[in-house]
Image (cartoon, rainbow, N blue to C red):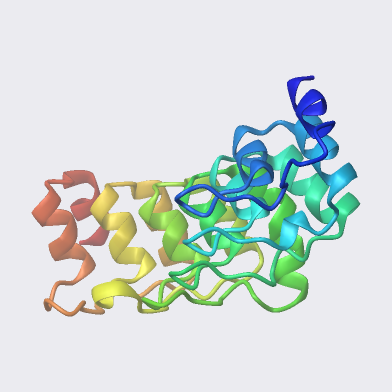
Length: 212
């Protein structure tokens, strides 16, 4: 491949970064190119530890784009600890995958986070993986997280809970699943709004009905 050809240049710096702090490995991970990742790692096995200006490592770039095959390769073959790094918002790779509605990638990460008791970790704003999934309207991921007993009533950015976020996106099935798991509907956010008020403000009549 072209990457193989370039790597034959003795002067090539594999740790070189662009203006965003991105390396060739990070770009390959974001593109989901396992072939190029394997080629780059064959020359520089330390590359996965590098981070860009947002503190994203190569694994996080794969998780953001939903490249579950790349995430699995980094974890199972390269030995990258998927729970070790946090980005500049203090998000984990699991939170990033949840925010991107990357169901298959969550399948890869969730057993590891669950085994370490890290499913309910929060970012700098207080948002958990469950809240990132609810905000992204990712019902299947919310179900996956609830199955490993994710905390339902965590209060995050601006006092929002997962129930409020489900109400805001208008997903009644997700809202019902959260309520069945113990999600509270009477909690108010920093603006004094409950889930019912949030749903009403967005015009989600079916959600309003479910909350009544």
